[in-house]
Image (cartoon, rainbow, N blue to C red; front, side, top):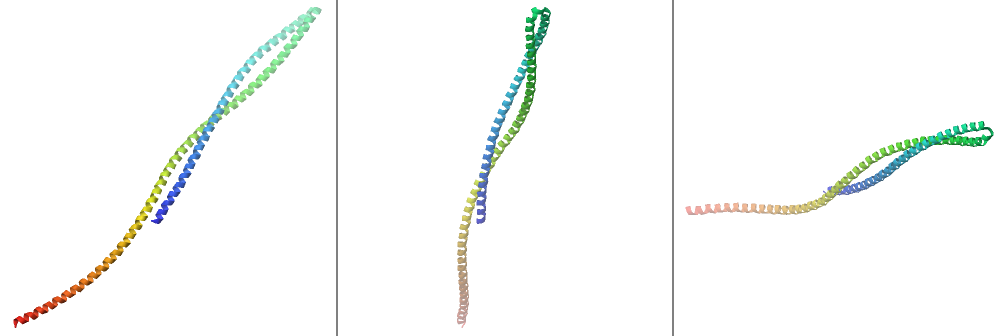
Length: 252
C-alpha cells in the first residue's frame, strides 16, 4: 500500500512537470503566432510598396511615351526647318550679293535644325533605354509581387497552424492539470487508505488477542465441566450403591 502511495505521488509530480512543459510550449506557440502576424504585416507592407512602385513605373511609361511624341513632333519640325533653310540657302545663292546675309542666316538655321535633330535622336535613345529599364523593373516588381503573394499564403497557412497548435496546447495543458489534480487526490486518498488499513490492522491484532483469551477461558471452562461431569457420574454411582443397600435392609 505504501509503494502504491509513493507511485501515485510520483505520477502527480511527473504530471505537474509535464503540465509546466505544456504551458511553456503554449507560450512559445503564442510567441510564434505573434511573430507570424508581424511577418504578415511586413509582407503586406512590401506588397503595397511593390504595387505602388508598379504604378510609378506605369506612370513613367506614360510620360516617356508623351515625351516620345513631343520629340517626334520636334524632330519633324527640325526636319522641315532644315529643308526650309536649305531652300532659303539655295534662293540666297541665286540672289547673289544681295542674298549673302540671308544665306548666313539660313546656314545658322540649318545648323540649329541639325543640332535639334541630333538632340531629338538622343532623346529617343534615352526614352528607349528608360522604357527598356522600366520594363525590366516592372517584370522584377511583378515577379517580386507574385513571390510576396505566395509567401503571404504560406505565412497565413503557418499562422493558422500555429493557432491550432496554441489551441491544442491549451487543451493539453488543461487536461494535464486536471490529471495532476486527480493524481494528487488519489495520493491523498491512498494516504487515508493506508492510515485506515493500519488502524484496521491494529484492531485486528487487538481482536486476535481477545480471541486467544476467550479460547483459553473456554478451554478452562471445558476442563472444569469435564471435572464436574466426572464428579456427577461418581455421585450417581454412590447413590445407586446406597439405594441397593437401603433396599436390602427393607427386605430383611
